[in-house]
Image (cartoon, rainbow, N blue to C red; front, side, top):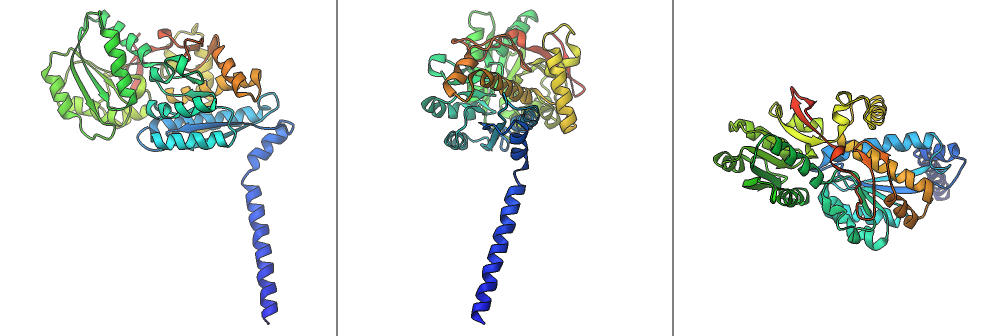
Length: 397
C-alpha cells in the first residue's frame, strides 16, 4: 500500500511539473514571436528604470506605456537589422536607492544601454554606476547636472530640455512683459535645486531680482505658509519649479489665498494630471514646454509636426488617450538608442559614440544635435510658451 502511495505521489509531481512547464512557456509568447519575426537573431537587451510608482508616477507611467508600445511596433517590423529588442523595465518607486539597485540589476543581466530614470534625483543616483560600468544611459529628466559637465558624464545623455533652456525661455518672457521682481518656489530635491541654480545664474546682470525664495518638500500637502510670504513680498510674478502632485497642491493654494500675480511653472507639470490635481486652479498658469501638447496649434511648416502627429496617432490608438511630454521623452530616448544600435550593433562603447554624433534628429522634444560638449542637444527653439485655458493647453508664443 505504501509503494502504491509513493508511486501516486511521484506521478502527481511529474504531472505538476509538466503543467508548470507548459505555463512558463505560455507566459513568453511575445519573445518567441519576436525571434521568429526577426529570423531568430539574437535579441538586443536594453533596460529602463522608471518612476512608475511613488511621487513621480505621473512621469513614469506614460514613459513606460510609450516604451512598451514602441518595442512592440519595432519588433513586429523586424527589430534592429533583424535583431528583436528585449526590453526589461524596472520600477524604482521614485526612490534613489531603488534606482541604483535597479540599474545594477539590469547591467548584470547584460543590458547594452539604460533608459531613465524619469526624474532628476533618480537619474542622478544612477550616474556613478553607469559611468563606472561604462554603460550608455539616456535619462528622461530635466536637470542640467545630469549631463554636465560632460567630462564627468561621458556615458550619460538625456532627452528632456535642460532646466537652463526653459529658464531662459521664461526670462525672455519676463523681459518682454517688464516683470523684474520675481518670487521663486521650488521642490527640495535635485530637480528643484537645479532649477534654483539655473534661475540664479540667468537673472544675474539681467535687471531681474528674486525678491522672495521658498522651498517645499515633495510630500508636503500645504504650501500656504510659503505662499503667504510671497504675497507679502514685492513679487510681480511667481515661478515654481516642481512636479505633481506638489506642483498641483501649490497651484490650488495659490488661488485659495487670493494671489493675483501671474503664476509660471516649469515643464515638470507638462501633463494633464497636473491640471486635474489642481482642481480647477490651473487656469491661467503659464509654462515653457515642448510642442507636443499644442501640436495642432503650431505651424504646418514646423519640422516636428509630422513626427508629433504620428506619435499622437499611435499612442491614442494603443491606449485610447493622448500622450504627454513625459511619454515624448521616452519616445526620443528609445529612437535615439535604436539609431545608435543600427550603426553600432551590440557594442556599448560604439553605442555611446554614436549617441554623441547625433545630428538633426527630429524628435518629440525638439531637434537633437549632440556634441562632446552637449549631451542633451536641445536649444530654446525646442520649447514654446503655453497657458492653461479652461483645462486645455493654449499656445501663447
